[in-house]
Length: 196
Image 1 (spheres, one colour):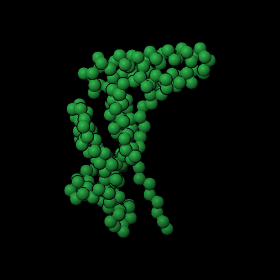
Image 2: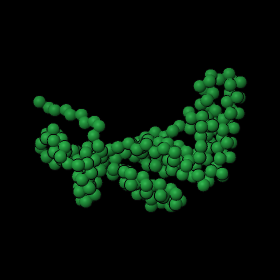
Image 3: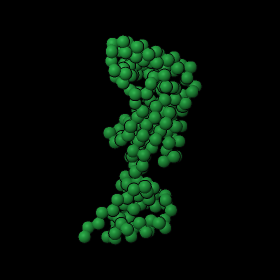
Image 4: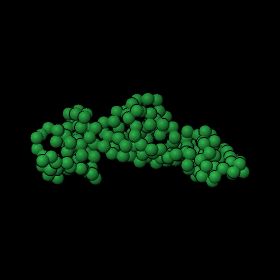
């Protein structure tokens, strides 16, 4: 008889450890789960992934990051890989008057705020015009966002989810850190590295 086991709600490092043990043994996954109970999260990854460079184990440690209030430009850098899986806050559905400058760019708020205000004014103008043209309310909002979001500065705050694994995360963030970054953005990516 075959056995099918669905694993959910497990710490990413524990999941990677379980898969690594499973790949190197003829034992059932149930036996490996017992062994996992006695091993603290992180020690296996530190020994076999970091210490020995078994990069494929890092692909088994999957997780989802939720990155909030980062500049649109920073979000684009994260998304700039064919391996990106996730969702960004849509500038097509969030009202323009709810947009704000990312807290990471507080020192540039005076410069960026007028551009956000312009996007909001363009949104309001098109909302009135499209309503007068008889478009249904939901279509008015989406169309007005489409016509005004091009005015948003790249420092506008956005949020995104990033479904990834340790290996892909480390490879991509390393590549970003090797590029030319302003000091605030380098500090943010280093902080992100430490969190993961």
